[in-house]
Amino acid sequence: MRLLLPALALLLAMPARAQSPVVSTPEQREAVSLTVYNGGFGIVREVRPLALARGVNAVRFEGVPAQINPASLSLASLSNPGSLSVLEQNYQYNLIGTNSVLDAAVGQRVRIVRDIGDRTIAEEGVLISQPNQGRIIRLDDGRVLVNPEGTIELLTLPEGLLSRPSLLWRLDSERAGTQRVEARYMTEGIGWKADYVAVVNEAETGLDLTGWVTINNQSGATYTDASLQLIAGDVRRVQPQMNFRGGRAADVMYEAQAVSAAPQEEAFFEYHLYTFPLPTTIAERETKQLELLAAQEAGTQRRLIFDGAGSYFPFYRAPRPGAGGATNEMAAAVVLEVENSEANNMGMPLPEGIVRVYKEDSRGNLQFLGEDQIQHTARNETVRLYVGDAFDVVGTRREVENKRISNRVREITVEVEVRNRKEVPATVDIVERVFYGDWEITQSTVPSEKIDARTAQFTVTLGPDETQTVRYTARFRG
Image (cartoon, rainbow, N blue to C red; front, side, top):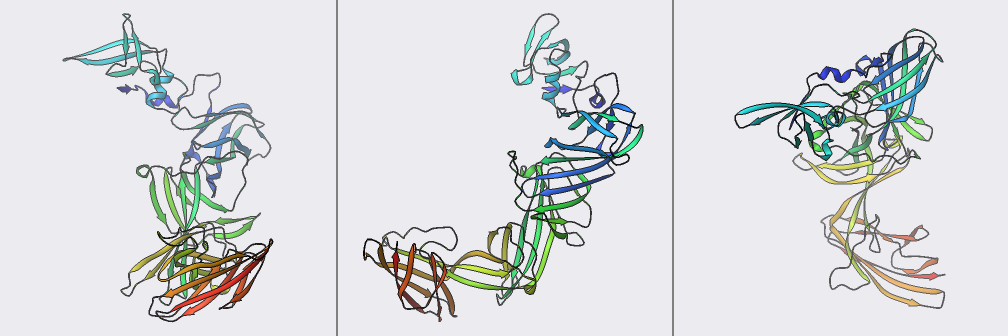
């Protein structure tokens, strides 16, 4: 079914009232600034001129985000501070569309134009049901048409429909004339995340790191030439916030933009604030990327970690079919460690995000090594990236004895065999995290290091195609 609107321009007209409203459109913006939080919301500040009379004024403020939080809005006059107050505010989002027009037209006279055979028939009647209940028209001759084929023409356009979400205000102004006003409000549906690209050098002793900001705007508005800031940190919100979701792939534009200078970073409260030097336009349903940071030749250490009792990172592997219940075989985890310090050519706060690691092969082609998620990382902290598992460095952990010495004392003996099938030496950190209570390692074939209250580490260096076995006995009390 088709819907014919004879006068679309009328959609922009307010219902007839005693006072015609002052209409403010996004095109009249003098300035707009946007602060985006990685929690999926943003703070918008925009400046527009309003031509106001002295006393009470009706104002329609068009083009606000569809996901605005009206309760967060504040309005102030920049021309005459303190001279403006909001008496009443309404948020209207009944936007034009086939269903909304027909919903508003229930009870109104309409014309239905149908093709019957080789004839076109036009009949008038009253629309008596909403679209979600089925289109029902009572014709002037008494007949009732249920979901008729054809075109419905509206004889008059329903009132109250808008082309874009709007705020309707009653403002009390102490002065007459044009005032520059600033509106500030919160909107859902816009957020950002960090993504990083790390390229490891040939010797695997350093890397180049580039950080990107990915902004996804599903707020229902476009921010043209906006001054952009980002807040990194975990900001607490009392009201349940809407999930930050991207739009469907077909509906989302993607744009990568490298600004001429990196954003200025500064501590702000207990968070970090990033201010971009150039204005940018963030369109509705657009995903935009901006460069956040860059570091060259940051030193890195590659570690091989065998964690047969559990995992250095939270995953657990079941024994192979037929293996003993106290035996666990696995490959060594590959971990890259980078000190986030100025001495290491870094020293910048790193917002939470995914780090994708690459390295050039012998032909100069960039190959993907793995990726990991980092949390917010402050200056002078260590970044640890678990990028994958070693192909040629594997091991077997076997608990060979577990006995009770007394009611409060237990003793275990463990053997960890690590095998280096590479043609070059390999250093492996064996991590054991099975300890509890008051414990000590009473015997060991390799010196141990106590990492924390429940973890010990043994380090072995294996030659090419070498196998070593670490055997230790630990006693627990408690």
